[in-house]
Image (cartoon, rainbow, N blue to C red):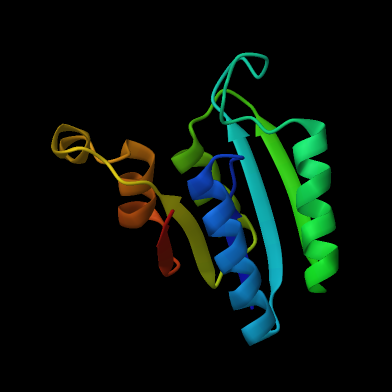
Length: 129
């Protein structure tokens, strides 16, 4: 089983990673952790620092989960990158994190989250932070 998880250092990204680890351990799967920046990586809050990525690697090691951590800064949005990598690795599951939103925020849902839910061919597990 191959699991792709969208990771940011925000609570929703950490929640997604924790659940992806649980799924990988339960199903004996390999994990592909993706951290994506749409543009200028020096100012994008979604882009994890090297220290944060090292902590992710340490967390994966402690959990005993086989994983690859990739950071993509290619000018594409997270939904597009996650869908492309999920197709590339023939993912059996994609895990994303969601945060609570105001009623107005719900109107625009996280557009990336909505696009992942609707466009990725693999099952998508959405985890609340």
